[in-house]
Image (cartoon, rainbow, N blue to C red; front, side, top):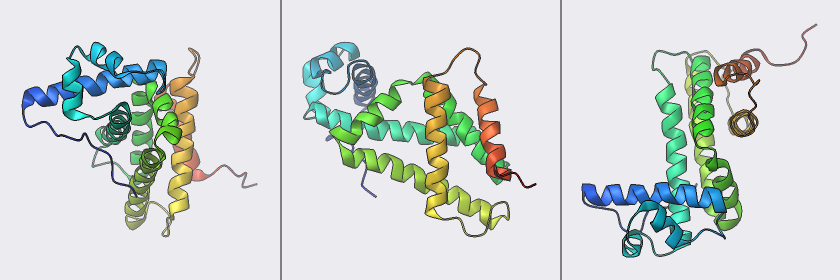
Length: 204
């Protein structure tokens, strides 16, 4: 697994942390609307409402803030899933809640798909790291569920990647391409959870 990219200079003051947050939030909009190649540093600082010099306090280039943004988005996805989970939940309930948390997050931050997809070509290491870290978290949850007797006793890495792949494409279909008559995020998560619990093969 690759180490997540961080700003070249970490802020030491609350004001600095707020400026960095403004830059990352502005970069989210700039890259989300224009894509990496059409986005510009001046566009990011203009959206952030900060001086150009403030950008170079934390980042040396457009590539650098893009890498930091991918890492920041990965952290946000992790946070959204963790916020949705209650420690009293069973293993299956945790997977349902984590998926719903992700669907809701993606629905509110649709730019995440464009930015993460661009990372495959702009910074492949960040792209790979994003998915590897998510798969590792899922595998940890599957192993914890297995230890509690809720899942099969031998969860493998392939199971985590298969589950992640399902979640990613459910997010694409329902959070990004969603229609007014679609199921809610809770209903989508419930359908996926039922398949996880019971499979999809006809037992007759």
